[in-house]
Length: 219
Image 1 (tube, rainbow, N blue to C red):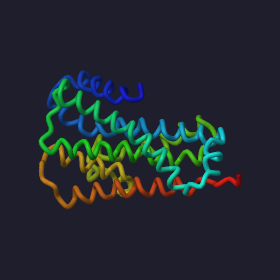
Image 2: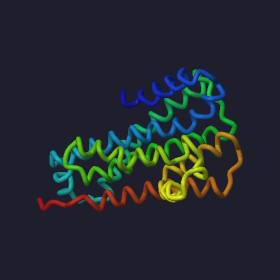
Image 3: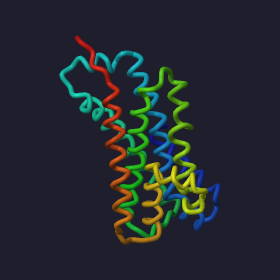
């Protein structure tokens, strides 16, 4: 189910909109947002369970750098996101008839970066939860505001001033801006490159902060 949920949501979206033009407009962004939200929840709960069952503490007795340990989790979850995005994209571009003006490989890359961003943020916030219920509560606190302010529902330029400032501080906004560009243009601009670098940088920062929360246990 973990692999199929983004694909099933894309199928549902296609028939809810019930128009090819509407689907072509909304699908590229949601192709990235669905894995982002799902991986945030999955990784935050999974890694929290590893922490509370002392699995992480036992692993920390091994001669591993903390960032190496966290990268191991990131690689495992990252492989899942590749399958998620790949399957959802394949179904959307073939069976559901999604049309993209820009580069499809670039669209897939941005969608993967979005999913990895959700994964990295989930790994980070797991350090601040004491139960699975608390881990889930971080979703409306950290992830959901990004979905609301990323430009999915209304362009950031049309938001109130304070909301625009918040939107430009949230990495998901840059991912959505990049997706909007790829949807309508095949050109690679400086703004697109900047957006990709911001998202990639935020992934690295989240992983680094997550590694900093790990405590080494004396064997």
